Length: 45
Ligand SMILES: [Zn+2]
Ligand SMILES: [Zn+2]
Image: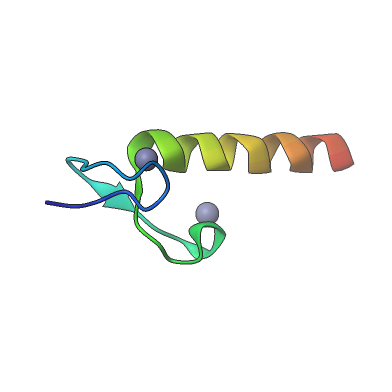
């Protein structure tokens, strides 16, 4: 079973990218992380 590194729970599916340091994140954590990244980029413009 895939395991989310951030919230330490099992997930149906996990995602990773450079922003998670290529650790496995569940959909909620992955979405939340990118929500903040997008907000930050929006404010810098
Ligand atoms: Zn998670
Ligand atoms: Zn990313």
